[in-house]
Image 1 (tube, rainbow, N blue to C red):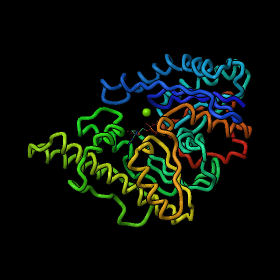
Image 2: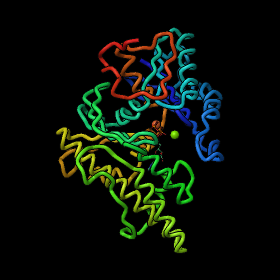
Image 3: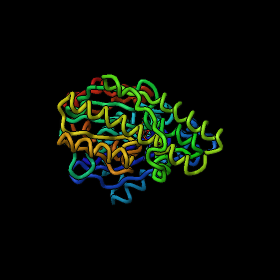
Image 4: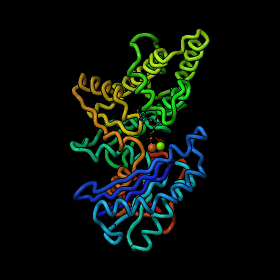
Length: 347
Ligand code: ATP
Ligand code: MG
Ligand code: FE
């Protein structure tokens, strides 16, 4: 079954063609980052309008790359939420219009399920069950995964997401958005042990996270260094490293706990922050000690992309799930309300 995947939940237009026998045939991404940079954050209306401009040309591009025609597409998956309502509606409208014209099934999929399943696009995909750490710009969640659509929430952030903390730290250090990769690059020049940041909520039981206190700690550290006239490139790198180490340690401690509590040996990490090298290394070391293993996607499939939506949609479309005539756009949508893949979806 040849599936076209469409991602437009935020500021990235992602399109992909996935064949459930041959695998991923082509994918393309346009990032609006430069357009929003002048405003210091994503402007929803500008995002929607740019998705309108980019989506169909990207669809044509992936079809050309895969040597396929529109008529060859057998199903369409689009991101139905969570995300920016206007941006979601662009993807949903195009998906439904194309699906209607071609007479093929269309399905709105969950953006975080897309992230969660992205590591399945790689060689040696993880088998169920596993524990998943979803770490992105808007989410930090630990989930027990027994199958597609069988999600049990183990813990989540009570305030900021890990990616958001990276982005805010970047801003404090004078770095551009998206901050994660820039903080990580700066941290490589940092001196180990120069600062020590707290590991929030690791001193008590439970699997929830909190990153807003860490953000304040970073801000205070930056301000103190600035007032002392010490905030040069080296000190900024030291702060970036201390911050990154604190986030990685905190996530690693909670992941270890989740593996021990569930008895799972496999850990899957997904979402933009799962591209972080220090996090990958920390989790590799931790899971090795438990005789377990960690799975993740290639960096371009950690952040938003069309391939993960095509893959998640393919699993559900193949099982017979599809939208009715209505476009589905849901800005807020808890992932544990999704149906298991083998049950028909209620309209
Ligand atoms: P959500 O998926 O929760 O709706 P989103 O789609 O904005 O949010 P993603 O695209 O999954 O989030 O990831 C973007 C986030 O990942 C940003 O916060 C970015 O700073 C962070 N990020 C990307 N690469 C890295 C990295 N190497 N290290 C740390 N953080 C990173
Ligand atoms: Mg993004
Ligand atoms: Fe995302």
